[in-house]
Image 1 (cartoon, rainbow, N blue to C red):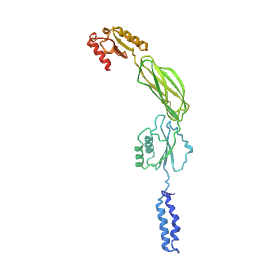
Image 2 (image 1 turned 120 degrees about the vertical axis):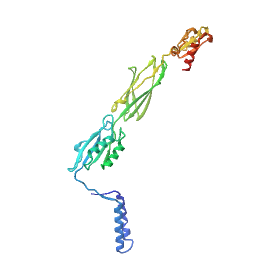
Image 3 (image 1 turned 60 degrees about the horizontal axis):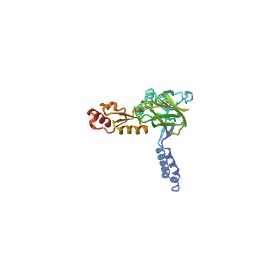
Image 4 (image 1 turned 180 degrees about the vertical axis):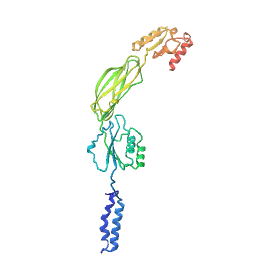
Length: 321
């Protein structure tokens, strides 16, 4: 069998009539010129003779990862009595190391005068493909690649919240949904293990952002869980996401005073819905830790002489931190 590497050079043979009939009469020189032109065109076409050697092995390397679920019926593969046909499968639900599979196929095929046929979508989870290709070249094993398009669909969920919140502070729960070939999904939100909302989402290809208003009352760290359910979703492990915002255990404002203005100020705070506690200067803690329960401290008509150095130091640390 003859194969031409650059067959387009044969188009130059259309100029042979010009060479032959350039001058009247078929002189030996004209014939030699035409023959030289034809041989040059044929040489530039780079002909090669392929000789089929009896024996050999064709190893079909089939990707069975979840992103493609490639199936190959051995009965439908062309066979030759002089060629041994083998099948090697690689990939699973979580990985598809093409480089490692190529190295394994090279080790099985070496010395048998065969080749490797790779069927894959090319989504490699390893980093050894260049090394494996160098190994195949070194062993003299050719590789044919039959690319297969991935046919999976998927949705992925990610939740985002502020890290720190005040008690009953309103905030937006940011819901990020990445969709691939899925247009609808059901989102369920649970707070501390209790479902609080369930809604249908319309999705576009790629990234989708939604905002859900929430408020948390009880102090402490809360667990917000989101889960997606969608028809045709292949990767279920990315359908759940968590966020853990912390609600500060603030008691409001600490009002330090023994004067009437202190009581009036506390009354104004209460009218605005701001919780507060009124204490005398002598009751002020001398350590900063008890003060961290408050969101702020107000000293109303308090003389410096009414506070001890330890109390002043505690207030200083509270304001600084």
